[in-house]
Image 1 (cartoon, one colour):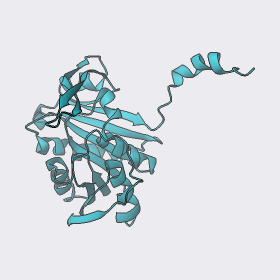
Image 2 (spheres, rainbow, N blue to C red; image 1 turned 60 degrees about the vertical axis):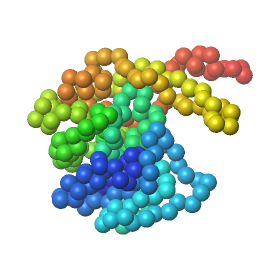
Image 3 (cartoon, one colour; image 1 turned 90 degrees about the vertical axis):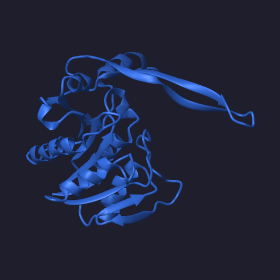
Image 4 (cartoon, rainbow, N blue to C red; image 1 turned 30 degrees about the horizontal axis):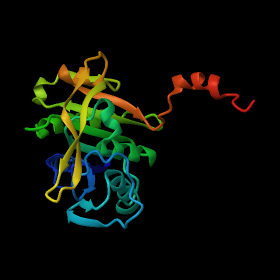
Length: 250
């Protein structure tokens, strides 16, 4: 297979480099990633400045763009043909629930899907002491299984892996997005010149443990596989709003 790799943690991230090294043993792999960390950049595309690509190793490239830019540049500039698969990751930290709306990791997979390539966003559910080797063993299995799957149009996979030894993983669970509970705050401070500045942050996050969700799977030791789509229409709301706006000028 021809695989395009990217991430939002940056070109030097251990998750990206380790995954490329392992997959290159069986596949043709090209990796392009941001030159610095672009966490929470979402699906930004760079249109107000030139993008540059720098080769930093064999089949390994960095750019001053975003994760979504990386996929666009990889497919339209670096590769001689369309890849069989786009993988974004391995992200350092989970991407579950509403987090997917902010995630550059997820956005890169979404961009691959919009360009007609089967795509996956892959994250490891930890903040420290990442078991990348175990996660990569699981990822290689997912790739092999995906060979026989025709991804539905406009659909990609958001995969989260528990940060536990591979032999302790209980299996796979196909899930829906869960509900994250944020404790965000805007922290106001004053610089040495007396000017105010702000940090957006908080004192941690939690979630609702709802059966069938990504959080539910991870807390029970399962790999969470959540199909996501490009169409974010709230279809179950259309009839509600039609009743109010359907004949507004009638």
